Length: 293
Image (cartoon, rainbow, N blue to C red; front, side, top):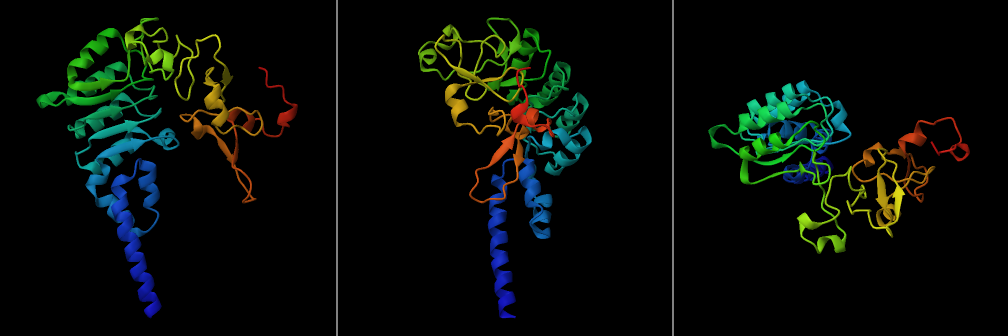
């Protein structure tokens, strides 16, 4: 009997510690994982509104998120949602986003990179709706939502707070609305931002998919990444990133969820993975395949 009391007291202490940790969890995936620990912890997460004021969806859950699921989960914030982060959610539409915005008028951050089903019109309507009653967005990230123009950016800037930021701008080289990443190369940073020769979007300036350093210098060495879309990596990043056990190509951090991890039976073995290209060539000997396509 005493042993059972000790175990119950020990579990109560663990439960209290977990409750303290909950507000620091980063994404929906982490919250859902915690709901499996115990029924009491699941109930605590479900009923605590404060845990749902910052909503973050990232791969691998992104591909499963629909308008209805988004509406259902964000409703747990009881209209107090402050941050909405949807990364590469290809099933979320303008209608679904607008439904969340209308139900949560206090949103200050909308971050939807790679949500290619969304449209400029839908984003504009959501931002305009949030600007009512003198409310201003602080952050708007729309890289990967196609179709924005200079006129769109001009209007959007009026709906943001004075310190508000948008992650896209007009590329000085192609004159399109694109994301222009900073360059970590020391020689580029010695110049003013608007004077950098490498200042341009990803399509105009070749860059490392991991650190965004420009690869325009003639003595710069680059290596192919497994990400596709002609992504390349600087030599420094290529050397340190984990590589496919067959083709020896690494994924950048953003696309690392595409790795097909290999189960390890030997505790002394290093973790390994296959890239998508090699994984879907199951049944062939990768060492006999000509990878030059």
